[in-house]
Length: 206
Image (cartoon, rainbow, N blue to C red):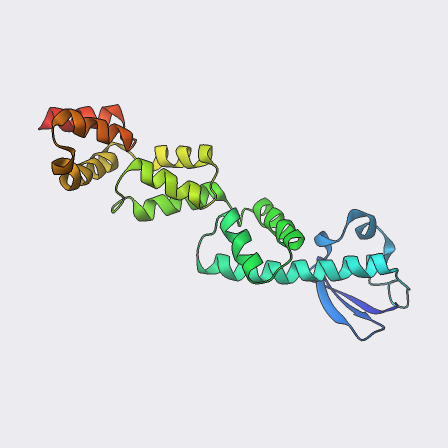
């Protein structure tokens, strides 16, 4: 296979390559393996007319596939904040190769366009007013692929005294009759991960 042309775009980070079989596609240099990225095969001034191996051709096509996955990812991020695992699932569901998806996730994380801690914080802020309990919030976050330690840290930050007290009051209003006596209610609140301080404040104020 022969390189017919190689044109650089976007400060050299993006390239457009044409091969002798008529293929024409764009790729991002960072998605090429180092052993190819660091050779003059990526130099637009000298690449034209050069013969490439099947391995090199596959690397260029892989980089192009990664760029397509990246564009899909960026469209999803533009619509709403994403978490890593959720974005992986969406990209794979759209038919993108797992290896490409992992490369894209790594790049977007490095660029801070993808941040699980930020996702957790924003997700919690949007749900605190209607959430039933800290345990359910934590479970939902972990179910979205957020690391448990990150989820717990985000919940601790988001659930200040006022927010937790309001959540506890809503929970009691809905479940007090079902719980029965005060002791059972306190046990239920503890099982739903309400803090001892919040539980004590609630019953002290009654």
